[in-house]
Image (cartoon, rainbow, N blue to C red; front, side, top):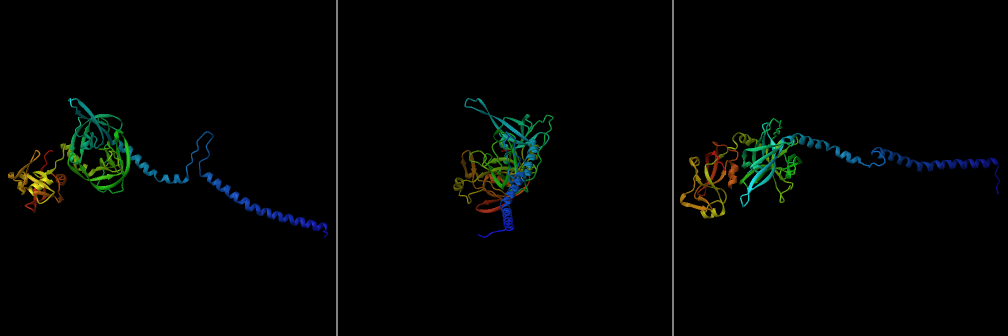
Length: 404
C-alpha cells in the first residue's frame, strides 16, 4: 500500500472540492434557467388577462384575440345605432280597420298593420297602397307612442304607393331625408326600420342583393320595374317602412317579400325612392298620378282569341276600339261585324295589335301600363303595331289615363 503525506492528502481533497463545485454549477444552469424562463413567461401571460376575481365573484376571461377582432366592428355597430336613433323618429306605425260583413250582415272589424315614413312637417306619410287599401279607419302611432287619426289623401296603385295625412297638433315631427336610388350598388349596406308582425320599432340590416328586379303586383295587374332586392329581413308589417343607406337616407320603400311561408326568406323588395320622388308631388297635389294613355279599348291576347281570329302573333294588345285621338294618329280598331263575346266583354276583331310602345316590348296589358307609366298627357310616343301581318309604326298623342 502506497503512503501519502499530509500535504498530498490536502491537495487531493481540494481538487475534489473544486471539481464538485464546477459540476454543481453546470447542473444548476441546466435546471434552474428553464424554470426562470417559464416563470417569466407565466408572469407576462398573467399581465395580459384580467386579475383573478375576489371571493364570490365569477371569473370572466376575454381572450386577447377576441378583443382585437371585435374592435374593428364597433364603427359599423355605432353607425347602425346612430341611423336608428335618428331615423326612427321619422317612422310611424300604421293600424288599419277594415269592416267586413258576415252572412247575416254583421260588421266584423279586421285589423291590419304596416309602416310609414314622415315626408314633411305637415304630417304627410308615405306608405304602400296595399297597407291602406280599403281601410275604413286609420291610426298613426308616432315614435313617442302618441296615437293620432289618419286619412288617405293620395294613392298610386300602379307603384303600390299611397300618402296618408295626420294632424301633428303642434308637435314637432321629423321628416326623413331623401336619398337617391340611381347610383346604388349590389353589396351596399342597407338598413330597414318597421313594425314586423306588430312588433314596432324594429331594425334589420343587410345588403343590396340585386337591382332592377321586376316586382309583379298581381292585385293591380301591374309590374313595378327596377325594384331593389335586399337580404335585410322584410316581414309582414314592414311594408311601407324605409330602406336606408348607411347615411340614414331613404333609398327605397319596403314593399314585399319572396317567401313560401309568409315570413322572411332572405329576399325582400323595395320600391326605389326615385319612383316615389316622381309621383309624390302629384299625390300631394291631385291625390292621384296623371299619366298618359293611348285612347283605345285594349284586349290582351290569349290563346282562344288568337285561335278564333287566326291572328299572326300570340302576344300583344289588341285594339278592340279606337277613340278619337287614336284614330287621328292612324290606329285602327276592330270591326263590329266580327264581334265576339268573351264572358261579359265584347271583343271586336280585325284591329291593330300593339307590340311595342316607346321602344318597350308589349306582350301583355301590364307591359302596356309599364311602357306608359312615366308618360304624361299630351306627350307623343311611337307605337309599333301588327296590321294584316305587317309591322307599322305610328306616332300617337297621349290622353289622360282614365281612373281604373
